[in-house]
Length: 168
Image (cartoon, rainbow, N blue to C red; front, top):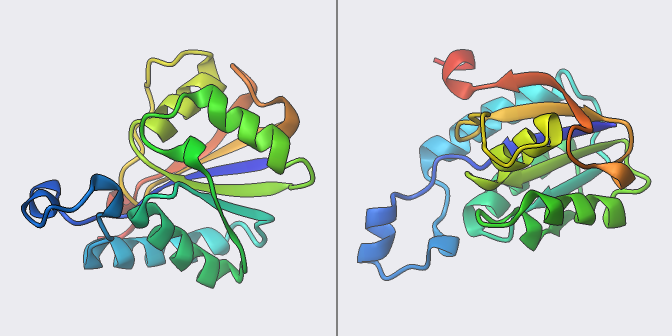
C-alpha cells in the first residue's frame, strides 16, 4: 500500500495573518504555494497513476493544497481529518487510517509540520523525535503492508521529493 505524505504549500506569512487578526488555521495558500503544489502534483501523477483516498487537515492552507491535488488526480472527495493538524500525535492518524482506509491501496495525506515529519519518523523508526524534513509542497512516499496495521516501524520510505530541487 502506498502512503504519500504531502506537506501543504507556502501560505500567507504568520505576521500578516496576525496583523489581520486571522486564526492560524485560516491562513490561505500564497501564490507561490499554489504554483509549487501544482508542479509537485503534476510530477507525482506521472509516477502514481491512481489515488484511492485523498485526506487533508481541516486547516485552510492544507485544504487548498488538497483541492489542487484533487483536480490533478480527478478525485471528487477530500476527506477532512483533524488527526492531521500540526499538534496531533502520530497514533491518531494511524487509527484514522485503520478505520477509513481499509480498502484503499493508495492514500495522499495533506498536512503540516511538525505532524507529518513526526508521523513519518514514528512509522519508519518507531520514534516521535522527528528526523525527516518535508519542505512545503514536499512529498514523502511510504510503503506499508496494510493501512489497518500502521504503527511504529511499519513503513518503508520509497522517496522524498523536495520542490526546491525539482523546480527551479
